Image (cartoon, rainbow, N blue to C red; front, top):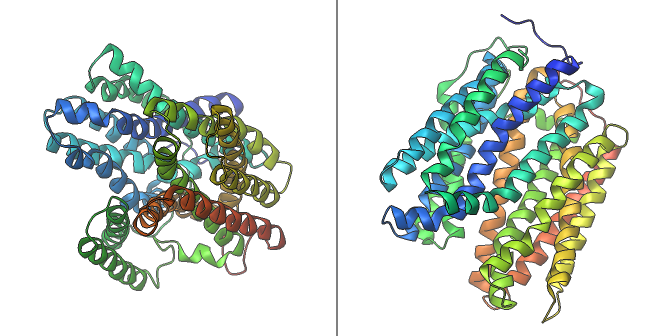
Length: 460
């Protein structure tokens, strides 16, 4: 068995190979979500299915992510983050091949479910691995690189899908993951660090309760966001809350709870998690509302809308690495607070667009939002992970994934609520709500400057 890597990180040469393997896995899982969104009409037409049913190609992936992120993170603490990451990489690669070979909507949906499980395994331990790959003094740089790859993958996803579909059929979208996955696995098995392992056992019943709680909550919120009947969405949310209560009861005496409530005793961890949820709710509100605003209210075409939104993820990618490096020298709370205040300003400026704006009027406002969001992410990730003890790195890493997905789901559900109560002005109200969420997140971020990194009673 390889020797365990202390918190001062890997040697520079090995570190480069480990980062390549890690970022390839995370990049593929992010890119596949963006690609599938763009290619959905083409896939639905080829499989002779209606648009409503084809949504499950997206939903299956997202449900697998949110339902299993914390169980995989807990498993990483027990068997090692490297093993969970490599398992996820193999599962994602095999499932990608199954997606490429799918012949019907059910077969593709099942393959996407397993692909989501693979992506969840990688994402759930990703931040924990960064903590062991990079020296502590360069942790912000490592988080910045991670955000850079995720943002870039998200930004180029629609373009990549269009290019691939211009030279081949939709199965090629998934088949391209196979050689990349094999390459990343070969690198990962050699270069990724072996991390410390906890001594407690994995609780399968706890994992099932966690999956059910988060799965039904997201099903209910997503159903409301897509206009499903409340008589279906409300019972799903209630069932999710019941399973969540059973989850808390079962894990009450656990030394390392799967839903890491023990970490929320650390004020700076709690503030960082709240900051993440609020900021991703802002992103969810914006990315769901903006297409309606640009196309219906401002008369832009679908293609124009795609290009007009692109400055946001591009600026996230540009600023992520800059902010990550700065967070190794300056207060992450201050950097994140400034970034989120900038994001709130950008959302306000978008909501106050003139009746007949030029493309430049829209683009520079999108860029401000991207600068603010990118300036926040890396410092927030660094502070959230650094505030957790090393032996709870898996739980903290799982919260990173859950906070992002829950925030985005909440944002999408709030857009649906806006359309139900104020049809004519729904996108503008949604953007204003996003500005409010970003403002609240900014306040939470600045508050972190005043609290200690660790709380008493949280053991290393």
